[in-house]
Image 1 (spheres, rainbow, N blue to C red):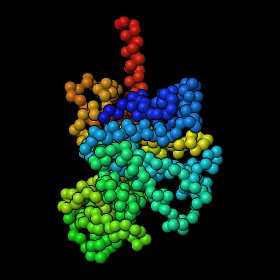
Image 2: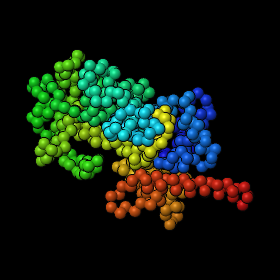
Image 3: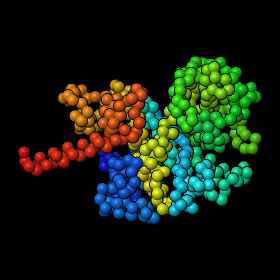
Image 4: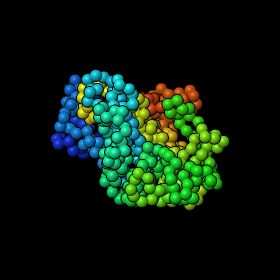
Length: 462
C-alpha cells in the first residue's frame, strides 16, 4: 500500500462520500488534502487562499452534512483494503476529546476532567494486519456525549437495560464492523482491554462466531474445579515465558518484563444477576516473573483454540499489539492532529472536523509504524512510497547516484525522519511523528516544486 500524496490520499478516502451534493464531496477532499499537508494546523493555517478558508468553514458549518456520512466513506475505503489480508486484528479502545472554551461547553457532555471540562467520547476500532505488520486503517468509530444531568448517578446503572448502557458500545461497534466487512469478518480477531469483559458482549461474540481476545477485568466464576479464574490460573504450570516491551503511559515508565505463560480451557459461569448460558472459552495467563502481586498480569480470554505453548504465545502476541490503538488516539489528540485544540462554536462543527482528523490520525500512525515493522530492513520501500517518491527522497538526502536496487522501508523511514530534523540523539532508532510528518511535508513540497519545474521546462521546449 502506498503512503500516497495528500491529494491522492484524500481522494481515495473521501472521493466517494455520499453527502447529498457532489460539490460537498469535492470540498471535503480539498479540506482533507489541506489538513494532511499541514497536520496539526487550524483550518485557517491549513488553507492557502482566502477562498479556500471561506469554503472550508462553509463546509464544516453546513448542518446538512452528517459527520457519520464523512466517516462511512473512510470506513468503506478501509474495508476495501481489509479484503487484501488473510488475518486482521481489530484493536479497540475508548477515549475522550476534552474542551474548555465557553462557546461549546453547554453542548457537550461531562467527562472525567472536572467541572471546567466538557467533551465527546469516542470508541474506535483500528485494523492491523499482523502478518505483514501493517496499519490498515480505521474501520469503526462511535462518538457520543454524556448527559450532564446524569453525572454522579451511577447507582441506577444496574436497572438500566443493557442496550441503553454505555458498555453496549463494544457490541454495537462489532455489529457495525461486521456489516461492512461481510465474509472478511471471519479473518478478524477483536482485541480488547479489560473494559470489554462484559458477559453480554462475550455472549454476543460467541453466538455470532466472531473471534476475539479480551483481557479479564475480574476473577470470574468458572466451572473448572468450582473455582475463581485467577485462583485457577495460579494452579496451572507455566508452559513457557516471553519477554515483552511495555511502552510508557502516563506516570508508568517504559520497561521490559518476562512473563510466565499458562493456558487452559475454561467455562465462564453466568453471573448471578444475569440470565443466559455458560460460555466455553480458552484462557491464556501471563504473569510477570518474580514481581509478586504488584507485577504485570494479563488474564486473557479468547475464542481462538489454545492447545499448546505456540498457540498460547500467539495470543499474547496479538494482545501486545493493543497498544497501537492507544498510539492512534495520541496521534488524533495531542501528538498529531491536535483535535482537542479545535475552537469550533458548536458540537456538530467539532464532530465534522474531528471525523476528518480521525482518519488523518490513522495516516500518521501508518507513517510512524512503517519503520518499526520487523520486516522493515528486508522489504522494498516501494510498498509504502511510489518509485518517484523514494527517488526524490534519495536525491534530497543522499549525496550519491540512485542505487541499482530499491532501498528498504527502514531506509525510507530514517530518511524521512532526518529530513524532518531528527538526529536520533537518544540512539533509540525510533522517530516521533512530528519529525516524520515534517519530513513527509518537506518531501512533498520538494515533489511539487520538481513537478512544476518539469512542466515549465516542457513549456519552454528545452
